[in-house]
Length: 146
Image (cartoon, rainbow, N blue to C red):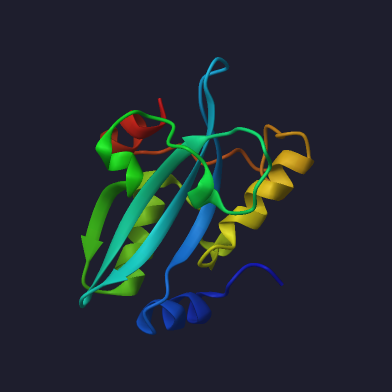
């Protein structure tokens, strides 16, 4: 099974491992992109980052190899949305600011597999479970995806 149950998400974060979630399309028809969110442990805290990259060829399973969607310095590392002291709080911050599905988190670097599936499926308008792609709720997240 690809997706992590909550105890495994929390365990990974407490062990210093990031978790990610592919968020689907971003950008415009002229400049198509994709988004994903990451919760990253950082010196006793947990940081929530929103990433946006160009959806381009060649197909890769490593989202970090895609060029940034936007031409700004933040895009090299993602847009920091929140810093929390507890991993569960990081999950809730990601949910409230990006609309992630709590049941679709994957281990670090596995969001690239989700992207690969998305491309191979023809870049569908809905998630694999036939839901709408998440829509960011915060103004910072909206700015990073428009």
